[in-house]
Image (cartoon, rainbow, N blue to C red; front, side, top):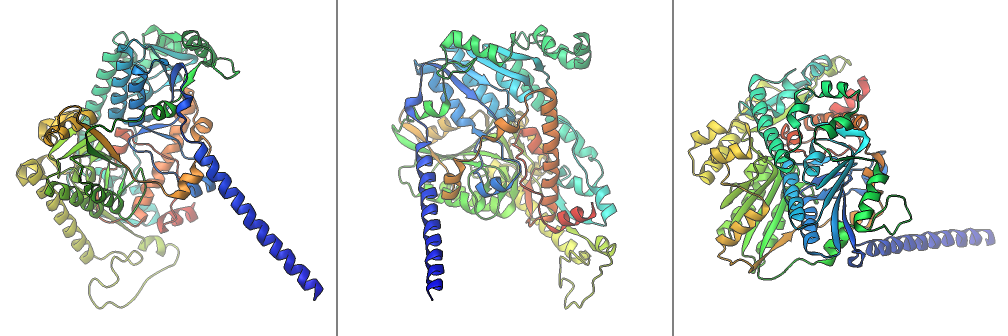
Amino acid sequence: MAFLKSVWRFLVAIKDGLALLFLLVFFGLLYALLSAGPNPGAVHKGALLLELDGYVSEQPAALDPVAALLSQRAPVREFRQRDISRSLELAITDDRIKAVVLDLDRFMGGGQASLAAIGERIEAVRKAGKPVYAFATAYSDDGYQLAAHASEIWVDPLGGVLPTGPGGSRTYYKGLFDQLGIKAHIYRVGTFKSAVEPYMRADQSPEAEVAMKALYDEVWAQWRSDVAKARPKAKLDALLADAPAAVEAAKGDLAQVSLANGLVDKLGDRIAFGKYVAAKVGEGREEKIGSFAETRPAALLAAHSPSRDGSPIGVITIAGEIIDGEGGPGVAAGDSVSELIYDALKNDELKALVVRVDSPGGSVTASEKIRLALAEAKKRKIPVVVSMANLAASGGYWISMPADAIFAEPSTITGSIGIFGVLPSGKEALAKWGVTTDGVRTTPLSGEPDVLGGISPEFDRLAQATVEKGYRDFLTRVAASRKKTVEQVDAIGQGRVWAGGTARQLGLVDRLGGLDDALAEAARLANLEKGNWHPLYIEPMPDFASTLLGGFMPEPAQAQMPTDLFGRAAFEQQLMFDRIAADLRLLSGVQGAQVRCLECGAVAGLPTQPEVGLDKGWLAMLIQHIR
């Protein structure tokens, strides 16, 4: 008996110890989280340092701490475009900020429209008499679009500038599916709805080639115009005409080619650059060679609270893939976004609503939920203005239709008015393993869609009819919104994507402009005088666990993003396999009818986050076992 009591006391002690340990860890995490917030007192005399180690996005995705901890690859950081732009605006008026430094060494890019907006703020800093210095080992298209607006551009002697322009290969799976015995049942409407072509062809269709070539050309022309205006002395044409010949003539020295063509101002490594900046703004507080006095954007933003004068104009960001159900920041979940809009409408002081859209679309039903929520604002006589960022295609356009006015940037990608559904079946694949099916049906649709025995012609007809009805609904809604006939919308629909400038000419958007222009229009529609209103940003809140654990995740981009030309190329190749995994997930995952533009993501510069793991749907598992 004494022995049992001793064991019992031992177990109780362990339990109490574990409980105490849990409490200590919990409150330790909580304290660290609360103390890790932006500190307004951290604004120092020196430079505003924009160390963009990751992507620029409209709404950074919420961190999944559990997935990140289990993954061998940490997610790449995302920086909110609005925060970067505002910190640059504050740098103009804050006397403590003497200059701005753009550290683009591990910058992974962003949408062209977002980068153009940041470029405008950089130009404003320079016009205010404050210099802007940019540094990177190697500049890609997106990084150089920002750097071109700087007063001085530095590049490491081991790197250089190599513009390549949009475009490249896209993977097609028809041959793989034929070998595996997989059949992709495609239901679509739209001559140019090429999102599903990788599952039904071995190459792109002539229609898709024409449409994408026109889109790429227009977006690339916008990039070149932006860079040429910001840096007129850069000899881009000479380098783009034959970059290999120019580099060969310089005996492989890309940095010297960049300097000779006026793309950069000075060659120097990070330490030399840091010493140069320190001579301009003061020495850094760290005992580190090449450090300079600097302030981070978070501290500057914390030191300057936004104005709350006048009436509020609500701003809701709808960013990422549109999905059914609920979700946090960075994904446009139909239930969550619509609830956010309905909650905002409960604010009697709200005078207007601006919807910032940066989405390739997604679920039809989720898109419709969001559209109906915005339509409710119209019913309540609240002006609704849509501001399209980098991408507002397919479902992203669907949700924009209730707007009183639609603004887009010249490089915004929009349109893609079309609809599709895709279902796989694996009858032949299973037969190769000796698996067959048989059964009894009470109706022609019993057991359909039969992923094992093969989807029947009857179900194919039914599914195609529903997709065609969905396309007619899309056309009807756009026609009513844009005051066009259904036939006129169909002529510019058919799943074709358009850049903002052309979309304006076609009447799909009303004006060219950014978020500030949309806010000004919303104020005008609400009869608010200048200076008598302020933007009220309405954001979804991340869950407590993500917030608590997110503060303890490492800074992943710093560790994994290479800086030189070859490292960046290798990293892009790695991300290509993540995109392939995403393609397979679309086919094998649980998806409803889609108003989505899959091909738009690469053009618009949407972040490509490394996958935690390949989707475990039946198709992915089958491929994994066959390897």
